Length: 191
Image: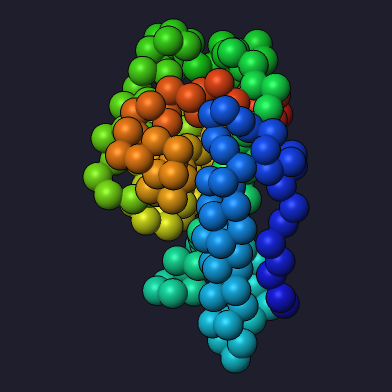
């Protein structure tokens, strides 16, 4: 199986001014593409040669895991964003957020802190467990919460390549702007 770089769900300039076309040219066009290329170069002749990205995330280690998870994580990330972001999730998810975090504002504060304070590179995730309980998970590097049995609902990429061209070292500013382009409709559908 040859993995492909998926099309973005919107034009490269559609998220401006929050994420610029210049950042997307590097983040999507260079970094995401490199993970796809690396994965395709690593899997021939291995047990993962015909595996889905989900199988790779759950079972692989080392370079195959790192590149496969980064392909999946980035594709998921792009599909958490929209130029027409809304401020709130749909009622069913909003009720679950209020139940598990106290309020939507408390959830946003906790998620923003998780994204802003993750040491080094990685991801902040909103996930649900098998009982439907929501939680926030920090994952370093290519980490993905599916390895721990969670279902990902939302992610914020906090690798420097996600924001450095636009925000330099101001990760909290990137997270603040990221909220303005979250696609709560898609996130709510995943719940």
